[in-house]
Amino acid sequence: MNSDNEIRPGEVVVPWRATEDAGIAFIGRIETPWKTRADCPRQGQMDGPLCQIILDEIWREALTGISRYPQLEVIYWLHLSRRDLVLQCARQDKVPRGTFSLRSPLRPNPIGTSVVKLEAVQDCRLVVRGLDCIDGTPLLDIKPDRHAF
Image 1 (cartoon, rainbow, N blue to C red):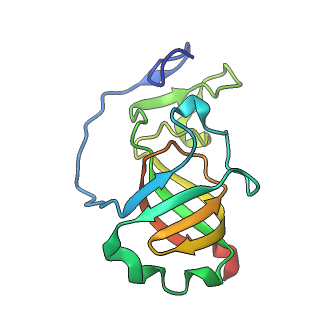
Image 2: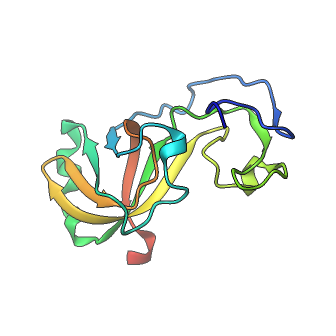
C-alpha cells in the first residue's frame, strides 16, 4: 500500500459530510513508537512496547485510584483515518467487506479502543503496554477494563 488514503480495488466510498455536533474534546495525547499506520501492529499486545498516555493537567485528579486496575480500556480518536469508506478490503484479504464488519481504523467516526496493561502512573502520565495507534493520537477517555466489574 502506497498511501494511508489509497482506495484498494473493490472498495467503495461515499460523500462525507463532516460535522462537529458531538462536542467531543480530546483530554490528552498518546505516545507510541509508531509514526505511520503501516508501522502499527494489527492489534495491541499486553507484552508490546511501553507507551505513554499523557493527560492534560486539568484531568490530574481524574486519575485518582486508577492504579487499582491492572488493565484499562483506552478510547482514542483515529485522527488520520478516512471516514468515507463503506466497503473496504482488509490488509490480508482482497474481498470487500462492510466497514462495520471489520476492526479497521477507517470508519465514519474513527474511534479506536485498546485494552492495555497499566505499568505505572507518573503524575499525568500512564505507562502502558497494549496500544496499537500512531504516535500523537488524541485521547478521548480511559476506563477500567470492564472485566474488573
